[in-house]
Length: 309
Image (cartoon, rainbow, N blue to C red; front, side, top):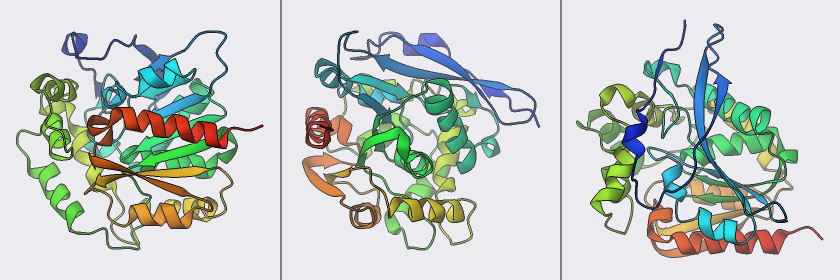
């Protein structure tokens, strides 16, 4: 069946605070067998042609978009790194399929893979993955470890349905389905230590003019594997088989007051060979809102510490 999508009007993104980045777009295969294309938006900030830094791939999660990294990108670019921050399908300035059942875990993996590998052809990637950005990005890492130089994970995990994910997820599952209206800005503020400026909350709500644009945000929480028999359980187990032998350096940047990942932090810290951990104090689940400067410093420090030669 043909995937039909909506596109948030550009006017919704005019004048957002601290988001001066030029938009970039590419078209990916929707995967419906009908040749349908989805437009994906990404930020692509370069330090200059003579820079010798790394390519940093910044992956957001639920229900945010590349706006999450607006204060992380400038210091990394100033340090000489190229920063690429795509909006996942269904979020930000990217197209948003109308039917929530078009959003599957595997579809998201394939959409992201085509974006960063087939289209942008990224290599030697420093991946920064937050929330669902980790649930997707870690799958890419397991499948294509040769594309990555290092990983910084924040507020994320890779569940298989074989573990109890805790009561916090149960609350979020109910809230994400029953909230009316659903406000991404309110979700971010609830998960941050910092009280957000109303204009920042509005920026997180900007991609979703009404309920018809929210199908991806509503569906994402339901895609987390909760039982051993969920659609993504076995693919995630296979991914873990690769991650447990990973030679790519991984740092888990744990927000002191993160409520959103349960034992996922320990699973990554203890399950990936040589994984490191740093704690970012006075920060919640949306650590980029609470401590953006510290996040950028952690990323830059890890790049320096693990640089080849």
